[in-house]
Length: 471
Ligand SMILES: *Cc1c(COP(=O)(O)O)cnc(C)c1O
Image (cartoon, rainbow, N blue to C red):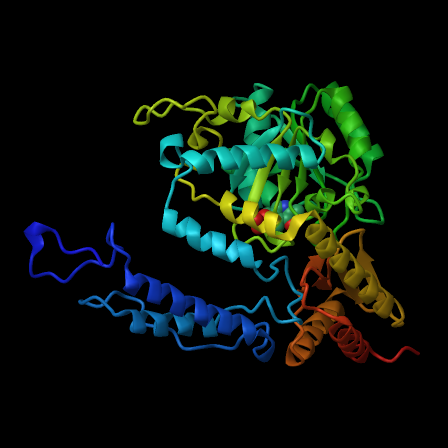
């Protein structure tokens, strides 16, 4: 530990590692924390996905410093009450268990405590970030020269995309401009428009077809009508993987329309874009590369620890046009631009580290195996549930599947969803309960690599038992 400075003799040493000596207390602290984390992961199967109420540790700092043992005991209480994504029955949300390399990189990221705001605060990490963004953009089909920036979540990626689109079309001062997105698009778009100072009506819904994908013929008519009325369009947002069912909008057709009308195409691929990392799965999200901007959330399926979201652009220099302010208190950039001028966030942790190390640990084969597993589990569950009379399934080409009783009104569907979710939780199976098209559904997200056929069969049997016997 670092000794207290000259002026503060008498005060105990502060808990920073002291250069240049090796700090055995820090090493021991880290090792004990790692042991506890490994024990927590190893016991995932013995705790339910959603734990009950648990004891809270003391919240406020005590007058005196607390020893490592006390801190570890406090941490343990938090761990005991945490959501448990490693349980094989954790199927509710887009929150998979954490990948090993991603955990290690997160720890190292904290220890380095670099800042992606400026190059001199994160020299190697800035370059790593820029290079990985460029690689990912090209791998996902964007043209050479494309790139982008990480963000703390898909909501921020979508917001930055729309701000960049608006700026590139010179519409920043226009209060009439609109954004078009499908009726099943994510709520973060409404939030983005609110932040951008636009009225809620500026988000114009395009209807979806029976598969949950945007109706591109309808989009064409809407674009024509807006053009005739002289109403400018900030962007069309196509979704590659909708949140309830994983539907994919017809990107090639939408891209053609956007080009014809000179409209920015943002693809919200927070769920689906990672499928294009794999040659075997790319065809599930065709046309991603035609986007002007693309949101990708490796945190949602690949096990990269939160947060890991990216905004990728065909012309990444537009980010600096939209967000650059100059950083008068920083040395000039060495050429590639400061991270703090590429987006909304100023100080940013090196989130790239856990993405980079996680992708390296998986390798392209591992990524493909992970996607294979997710799609295979969705198919298996779909087959099991399709055999149950009286159940209506809504899915798509990815790893999400939702279902609701075919019969009964919306209130009956809500009662069923509450009872069925509770019944499943009692058997350590956690699903979510989205309201979709006015009816409550149960939704399974099949990205958890620990889920096996035993869980899926148990799930289907329990669901069947929740339905009234068919006449
Ligand atoms: C989850 C999601 C988002 C938002 O991402 P966050 O990381 O939760 O902010 C945006 N779009 C879609 C389609 C999503 O599923």
